[in-house]
Structure formats: C-alpha cells, structure tokens
Amino acid sequence: MREEKTSILAHLKKLRETDPARLWRMASVAIGSAVGMAAAIAVVPGASESPFSTETVVQQLGTPPISISRHDEHPFIREDRVRSGESLGTALRRLGVSDSAQISQANTQKLLKQLAGAFRPGATLTVASNAEGRLVTATLAQPGAETTPVIEPRNGQLEVTQKPLELESRVHMQSGTIQSSIFSALDIAGLPDSVAEALSDIFGDAIDFHADLRRGDRFNVVYEVFYHRGRAIRTGRILAAEFINRGVRHSAYLFRGADGHEDYYSQDGRSHKAGFLRSPLEFSRVSSGFSMRLHPVLGVWREHKGVDYSAPHGTAVKATSDGIVEFVGQQNGYGNFIVLRHGEKYTTGYGHLSGFAGGLKPGNKVRQGEIIGFVGSTGWSTGPHLHYEFRINDVHQDPLTVSLPNAAALTKAELRSFETQIAPLTAQLAHLEQSKTVFLD
Image (tube, rainbow, N blue to C red; front, top):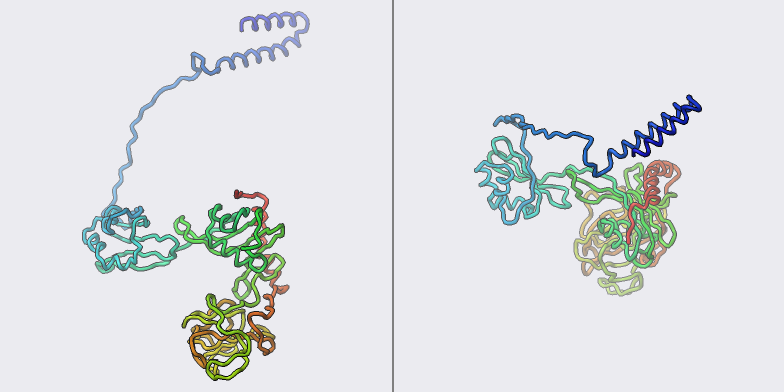
C-alpha cells in the first residue's frame, strides 16, 4: 500500500511541472482510486476490526389489557379434528363449551343418531361458544358433502339440522400428456376421476378413450372446483377442453343457450352430443329384437316393431333425444306409453311402463337423458321390460341398427353468442398450451 501511494505522489509531481490543468484532472482520478482501494481493503471479510458499532438493547414489552364481558355476544370460534375415542361431549368441551347440561345432552344416543355417522375420528369440528362457555353452534365438515350437520341449542335442547354449505366456485386449469391412460395422466396431475369421465363423455363422439389414445397425446382443461371456507369440496363442470389425439386437435366449450340449457360444442359450433342415445336404459339386456316373433301373450306370429329391454321393475327410462311429449297415457297393448317427437321426421315410443315422471304431459319439452318413466309390465306383457320404438316419418326402424342423426349445430345467431362466451376460455386454453404448466412423465 505504501509503495502504491509513493508511486502516485511521484506521478503527480511530474505532472505538476508540465501541465497544471491536467494535474488536477488526474489528481481527482488518482485520489478516487486510492480511496476506492482503501474502502475495499476496509470491508474484506475476516478483518480484525469492524467498521460498525453494535449495541444490545433489551426492553420488556407488555401486553395490552383485554377485558371480555360475560355478556359479550360475539362467539369464540375454535376448530379441530375429532380425536379417536373421544365423545361428542368431550370434543365440545375441548373446543370451549363448558356448560355441563349441554355436554350431557351431546352424549345422548338420540343426538348421535341425528348426526348420521358424521361425528367420527378425523372429521373437522367447528365450535362457536359465547363468553359463558355455552354452545352457539357446532358444525361437522364431511368431505365431498354439500350439506353439513349443524348442532344448535333450541328451547334448552341441542338439535341437529342439515344445512347447505355456502360454496365458492373457482376456475382451475390443467394440462397433461398421456403416457398410458387418461385416468393415469389425470391421477398424476392430481385431478379426480370425474374429470377423466367427463372428458370421455364430451369427446366420446370423436375419440375412443379405450382404443384411440396414443402415448404423447395431450389435453388442456379448464374446469370448476367448489370450495367451502378454503377447502375444496368437489369438482364442478368442465368449462372448456382440448384434446390432441394423434396430432388432431379436438375442442369443446360449454355453451349456455338462450333457454338456459347447457351443452358442449366444438370451436366451430358443432355439437359433441349424439343426436340419439342407442338405448333408453343405462343397464339392461335385449330380450327381444326387431323381427318376426311368436307373440308371448297372443300366441301368434307377428312383426315386432321395436326392441324389448329386460330390466327390473322401476328402472328409470330416459328420453333418447331432445324432444316434445306427443302422447302420455294408456294405449292398448302398450300399457302405459309415451311418444316423443324429435323435429319433423323422428318419433320414439316407450311402452309397458309402470309409471311416468312427475308432471309429464303432452307439450312438455324433454332433454336427452332426462327420466320420463319407469320400467313396468303394463299392457300385453309377461314380465317387467321396456318396449322401445324408433320411427322415421312414422315408419318403424330397428333402433339397434338404424343410422342415427347427429345433433343440430348452432344457428348463426347462436354462433355469435357462442363466440362471445368462449373468447376468455379460448385465451385460457391458449395460455395452457403455450406455458405447458404441467408436465407428466
């Protein structure tokens, strides 16, 4: 350091003898450099002397006085999980209830029966009590349930009522890549099976999720999740989705029409819904097809102009397509019979019913999959089954082999509204595709 200073001073002396103006310019630089070196040396880690002085200050801090009146109406809220082996009364006492009469009532079999098994180890118990230690309300959270049992004092007795949860809807987005199956990919991404099932239903018109999936196929999905007090309760509707299968992009958007009905359409307005369901029953077997047969009641050979589905008495019967009720009531050998009209060309018939859906009458609009009646054995029938007919221009067709029409696409007016509704969802799907927020191995 001393040698560097001597060198700088010698250089300054030489400059002073030749150029005074230059001297001061260079002197400024030299002095700045020297100061910089001195500062750098001063803060080198491990230096023996610290440039900062420190002082330890110890001060006792008091807490402000808190006074709660025994008549204060604001409740104390405490929450915890029910512990193994403890009774409801014990759990309430642990969470702030000290009233002995209420503790005794909480342990009665009558109250526990009203809770219908909701009180069990691991359940979340939220207790509101007043300043006197009396119970105001207690609720038990049940995973996935949209109602909760509420325990409240009424006329000196604890009573249980089921109350709906106040749910908050939030929009979630997720992406993934298929390696084995859609269920496996969504499971790795932390999505429930219900999302996989919904995707399968939505894109079922274009993709066979059992045979068509390939390693590397991708999906982007925007969907609802319902929360209660910050806890996810259940998954809601899929709002928009894309599936890239074998390099082909398929899109689906949930669209609410002017009548309030919702359905899924591709980005160009084509419906993802089949025009007709093949069967009006979810689980059944064909007991008699569309052919000539020996009538089981009349004992004569005659044409069977429909398909019989064997099913237990009371099984729900669904409308196979959107339509209007044309007939509902008794009709000869059909027994209890329903006829639905689907546009100008198509009608469907449902016979031998044990009963009809409540309020069903001619002129009613029904939606595909809506329950319209129940399997029975009325009319000319030897056992519970559904007789189902499919007609084109009033000519009977085989429901199992007839070429079924597609659902109608959106009209020009509907398409304009549709494009406005899906604009933010399209942006979200594009963001997912670009950001690849989730990568699945």
